[in-house]
Image (cartoon, rainbow, N blue to C red; front, side, top):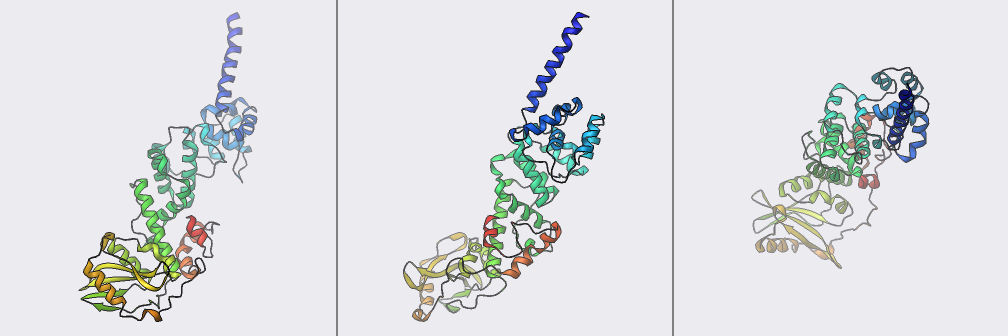
Length: 376
């Protein structure tokens, strides 16, 4: 009998120490709220070990969530699954540690397929858990559930490669990859696939963004003033690239960076030409000012994959250039940043996304914005 009287306080002290250690694992910003709720009842306190996410969600509810019904069910001894459902919290979050929760937990995907897949990619490191949870929530909201599972896997595989600042672009690219009838999908060179690794995915998303920039800069119109005239010299044809589609086609065929020239072209800083022989693309030529020279110059002439052009081709290009009266050419340079993006192209591009998500995000406004484009 005496032994029992001694052991009971020890058990209570041990349980209290364990609870305190578990509560200290929550983010310091929310320690007070979590502790206050845990102290209300022993069954609520037990959540610190059995379901840390549920304790946090009830102590720090997301906007619009009333935690009282779920708290009552916990106190009444309801099953964790029932209490979690009342709090609109997926049961798969049960396996995440207290360190994962640094903000109110947003709504998360919770269908059966998602639960099975996400269980294979939960973070083992408490340090990684907050970024992992936020990335999964963001990509699920901005893109779709398959992409959320994918980013969960890639974060566990290569956490240093996943930059949170890039998730909007990645999400948009993966969303449009599954929308084959959209303008945005038509600009994608390499579609998102669940088996991709993060490195190739980032490159594909960046390439897509370059295509977007090209099209929203130039719009559907053609460049009417190419400064020079098309012509043939020594068997070489000099063909003007007068539209976004023509520039993109040349970039793909010649494996170069012409997709990045939208901003440059719309400000009249250069003109692009395709050099062909018997219909075959031989080189890409760029005409622009060189240093302080106010007259047009051939500043770039390169073959496929940015290989050097032959001496023969340079001589033909020089002859073609000097068929023109360069002194009479007004290139009409425009001050950087003064030419707006094409409104119709911008809206045509993003409208399917706005409609599907039923909102127009601040970061993707209805009015064309160079700031929004640059921060994707």
